[in-house]
Length: 284
Image 1 (cartoon, one colour):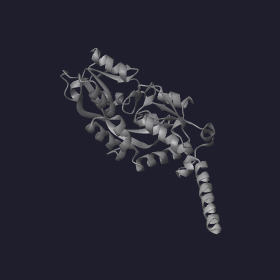
Image 2 (spheres, rainbow, N blue to C red; image 1 turned 90 degrees about the horizontal axis):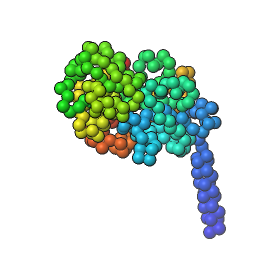
Image 3 (spheres, rainbow, N blue to C red; image 1 turned 30 degrees about the vertical axis):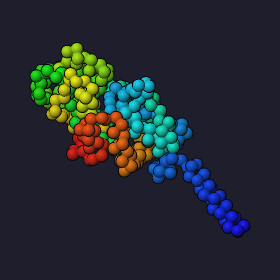
Image 4 (cartoon, helix red, strand yellow; image 1 turned 180 degrees about the horizontal axis):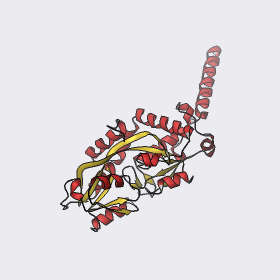
């Protein structure tokens, strides 16, 4: 019996040792992800620029803190990196402030509905694509506009730095653009009659439609776009880690449960999930 106890105690000790080793391992190693850059590992946090005015991607919650799908992504990526979602340091950024905040060293990564296209690729690098979709325009319910062509010679509201500006100017004759600071400013201006429609990412626009019954969406989509996480130029180690983390989010079916937390409408949720979980039909 004594011999049995001795063997059992050794087994327990070995198991405890193994558990201690596993707990002491860096999260990235435990998840078999590429190593973080030394400077970020030393800082012990990942600093994300996120949107706080673009539900369901990112908005301000009742407690005043950021909430949304991209917020949860940031927390999970930090969890992969450091073993805790609290290691995601979140800073609200406007569309036009995203890239200056990154290149100015205020944040490490942009996870803020950042569309990937050539002009931006000249000044920053991008992760692999994590979301694709079209943009849409929301108009007052009594608007005569039924299709995008009906916005010719009209005023469209958009947040500063919005990626849809180029597409609208090239495809809608005579369209005028009124650029505002935030989504809330755009919705308010639309309600006040200062513009004929407000344009934004499809998920945002359909979410706004579910929250504002006096508004409706023009069904026709515009400007197929893809979103990636923004990085400063020439940071290959960080890009390798981020790309691997994004692949793990998809393989872990992270988006299914996360979308359900922030999108109540079934049709909107399924449309959004398609953008997160399938390959885009084309990458421009």
